[in-house]
Image 1 (cartoon, rainbow, N blue to C red):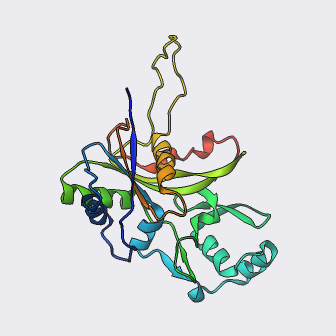
Image 2 (cartoon, one colour):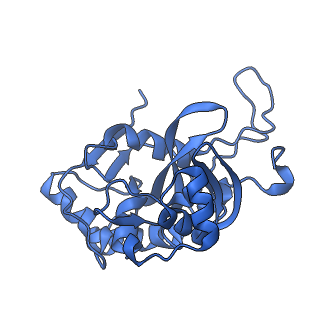
Image 3 (cartoon, one colour):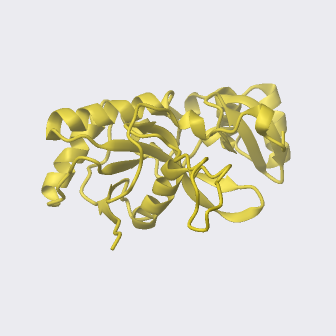
Length: 249
């Protein structure tokens, strides 16, 4: 029988700038009697990563440009938030119906360039980590030093999906794993050779972890046990489809 377990950690404190998240995760596992083991996957919401890295902005310190003010009036958005979105964007994909879809400097295409006010202090906005892969590696290394185990780490965020209603969590940073499984060239049980099958296992893990994290339960970290993945030093940017292969750009 194949079994995967997902355990949400409930005892992490409110994260402050400078927090060593890997050590905080190990300490929470000890408090909650969760044994970290080689091969576990640790999924961490980007929000606490951003808080630990000081990626919080006081809105009263933001000076919106005239362009941001003009567009914000049209979209009925806070011009300070719109200015942050512009600052965090490589390009604006679409602005309509009060929604801004942007491509971040990382290459992610998402609402508001990842700028978010949920689960943050009043009057503040939280930005995406500058380099989510580097953040994941730092957490992985801290866990390795503190607990002497070799785990994979995923930094997750919530994205909408074109053509489908609702949001799911996806991987924006990885460490210790390949974000894709490559089945190309293998044969299925019927003998058919697979030509394009590459499951996005890092995204699948992030989305599965969200089932125990929730949006209102204050569970920012989940441990996945029994998941199959390919170990390695890779990047979540592998999950971004190249423009030359994207039929919708």
